[in-house]
Image (cartoon, rainbow, N blue to C red; front, side):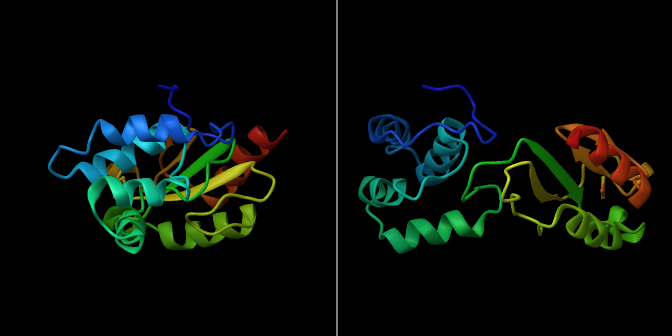
Length: 163
Ligand code: FES
């Protein structure tokens, strides 16, 4: 199987590979969730072409597969951008301004939570506690944790990666 593809250099759709991934989970309880995770690991997101394969493998309708996929925010409908910003939306960070910070970040990047910019440069994601509550509000940029985040600090981080 392919390496984890989390960014825009996604794997092209490959039905044979998708079938191999799905086949690993068809006999498991909760296999659909495992198969969705496996597909995301293989392709970087859940390719829409896989819905029919999943429906057939798990004896579900395509709408049921889509419903499960859509319910869980971890499953992406498109590959991530080159840089991934995650903003904590959990209680401690909210109490210390993550909502206002989220609005600022959305305006700055021109995308909403769960979206990727058209140029593929940024993906913005919500997360729910990064285990760093003492220095809320927290974000990650490309996996690196930043506490006590301010709008000014965020702008400088973005400037550094946008160069
Ligand atoms: S609530 Fe944001 S890091 Fe814990």
